Length: 306
Image (cartoon, rainbow, N blue to C red):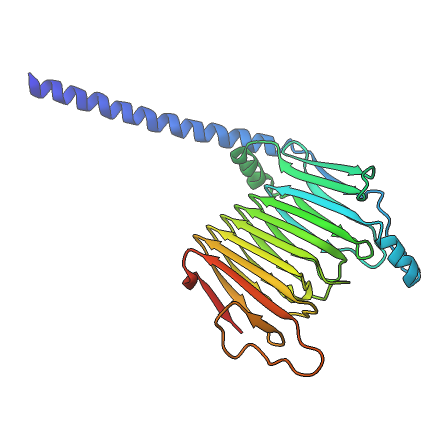
């Protein structure tokens, strides 16, 4: 009797497992079919946003250019759940946003405020409104991917706040007029470069990685007086070469991550034990000095090369 009871329980248990598997298969088929139907019902739109921010006329004189730039403000970009580009606009061109996306799965929102005493503020938010699984399946069936490109003006001084989460950001900020920039990345990838010197050295550049990684090139062309780099649960390649024209304090904080740091040559370096990369002060002028402050779980996670 006991053997028969055991066999019955085993048989019912197997039937139960098969039922769960069958239910899971039906759910997957149902979700996939629904996504395929929704893919046919996409509302893909092209939008261009141009806020009323003064831009430098390419025919303007140097004095007018400086006066226009001094009326600058802050650009706040919150870019989530897709791939993005942030690039310099052409000479004399205004700040603008170009986007192509499915209105049923994403939203693009802007806000412009020029009532503050410290200058105007322009905010742009792009994010997914549908569920991650359904949106991903829809894009797989339709072949469409959201595309957002932000063009920053060269002729207006701006402070930049840029946050990316669950996405990828490719940005070249070379040639811009930046007072400061704060760049945050969570669960994604970043490729940041300054392929040419900025109009003037930055006051501060802060970059924070969390559960992500990236590559940063020619940060010396930004020449920030303060450079803060924080890496958590990720890794980065950090290229500090470029046209340093002022002293800088560089803070590098890594937690559960690592970094490869490429050092410039024609500068004085303090705070790290790296022979052969410092040069002696000669004459009345000296090269810029980079002072490092390192905080890491294990200093071996940070490698300095030239």
